[in-house]
Image 1: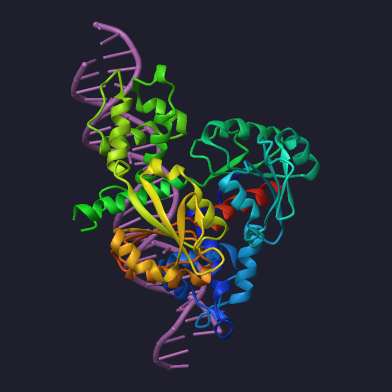
Image 2 (image 1 turned 180 degrees about the vertical axis):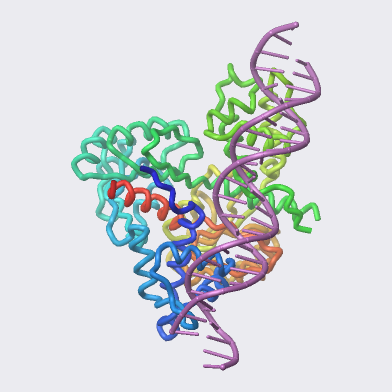
Length: 211
Length: 211
DNA sequence: TAGATTGTTAATCGATTAACAATC
DNA sequence: TAGATTGTTAATCGATTAACAATC
């Protein structure tokens, strides 16, 4: 059952709280109030409190939350405590950068292999991790029990790659291609569409120029 | 005046429409209905129609919209027709990839220079574009009339870099650092927080595992 | 105790969806 | 004409915010 107990909005705010809490200086770290978090992140304090109520056992009036417990609660809730293995398809510019980036481990993500069709990159290693031929995708995902696929191929190839991932048993897809992917209901697609961000930026500037 | 005539949601859907319209095969391209767009992108058709009403002069009943005009209208509305020059701060993994990526020109974005403190990259060129020392940021932005800054430095340095950008006259910031930036009211920050996406993915999988 | 903070219940706001009228 | 499609007005839904009570 896909119980949608928590809104996507809340879900996306949780990592912001996490980042903020982790960055707190040690001498100010023991306790933290929802009010302070809200102020620091430019959010409403009731909203923060509601979000925290979902994942935490609660804080103490006048004191706030125990920061370290709150960090643990968020990480556990999001599943950052247990590593998720992922594969990335497309070892071009962006794919290469994501594959080489080590910081995802903090979020429980471990990109264990890259796949590509380009014979000039297949067989090479990036940060000690292999770039493999796309033919081996399905068997690799099954044998390694991979459930996350990252798509960094051009838009025209994205749906095809997506289908391959699904038949490889992938349950969650992080899609960097600027295209809407069609997937079965049980598979989640999270789009990282940079064009959407650019639209907001571009429009803002256009408005500024007209003023 | 920051007239918020259009919701961010609408603004972020426009590039999706644009991508879809541009990818239409030539023989099916002349006219397009809101219903078709909605179906292809998994959206509600009334919503699509409302979005299109904002940027277009309207379609014809029974026929739909003239695809090419619609494309022009969206591009013009978003300001993709006039190029925006941008600088990127931080030529590490991700910064390097974004700097080297040529596809942003499609969205009216032109990253003209990268800045970094690391002496091993300063002075090099990437795709024929210079990586410059951070000291020159302000004078460069002013002389080249740059209004967009892209932040791809580590979180601890992001606010500092952000302040430098603002005093360099930047009006819109595309922030890849997982931290909340404090900016004056007239500056727009668009966060590309990958941690937020990962949270959604990770939670989805955790839920799946419990089933 | 007084007051900062939590947590809850009700009100507001905005976006999405549904129903319907207009039109080519 | 009939019907596909546009465009609008009203209803619904969900998230945010405001007001208030509870508590340490």
